[in-house]
Length: 233
Image (cartoon, rainbow, N blue to C red; front, side, top):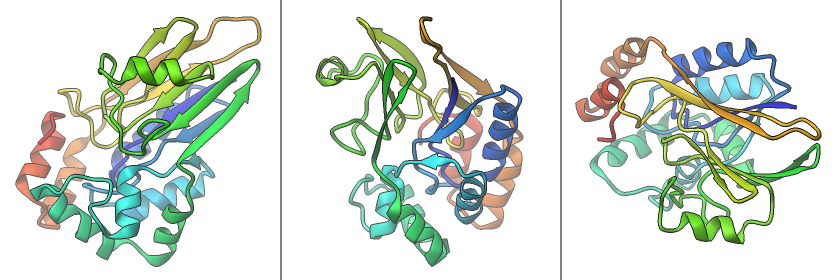
C-alpha cells in the first residue's frame, strides 16, 4: 500500500495542481488530505472543488473549522487572519462551507498490520502544534496506541521514530514554512512483513502565479511576501 498525504493547501490551487501531478507519477494507491483547504490563499472554492472532484478522503483543519464558524475559534487573531478569515467567509460558496463542516477531525485506518491515525493538529486538539522536538510530542506519542501517527498544521515536515511508533508531519502544499517557497507532502509505503517506509517529497511550483492572483485581489503585502520566502509572517 502506497499512501500520499497532503495538507494545508490554504487556497493555493497552483501548488495543489503541481503536487497532485507529482503524486500521480508515484503510482500511489490512495491520497489522504489532513485539512486546511482554505485560508490565506486566493482560491478556496477551486481547491475544494479539486479535492472533491478527485474523491480525496479529507479531514477538517483548524482554519477550515474557523471559517465554518466565522470565528477566531481555532486560529490566532492576527492582522493577517483579521483579513483572511472574513475574506474566506465571504468568498466561499454555501455548498463548500457545508462540505467543510461535514469533514471529520480524525481518521483511524488499518493497512496490512499497521494502525494509522490521521489528524490535523494532534489527537487531542485540532490546532495543537506537534513539532519534531516539541515539549508535548513525547507525551502525545506515549499516549498513542497505534503504529503510525500522521499530522499536519505546523507546515514543517518531518519523519521521526518513537520506539516502534512513527510520527509523520507532511508539511504544507500551499503555504510552506521551510524557508523555501516549495510544496511538501508525505509518501508512506506499507507492505506485509516489511519495514514501513516514509519520506517527505518537496516540489517546486510557479509561486509567482499565486502571488499575481493575490496582488490582483489586493491581499496584504505581508501575506504575499510569505509565499515568496516560505517563512512565517
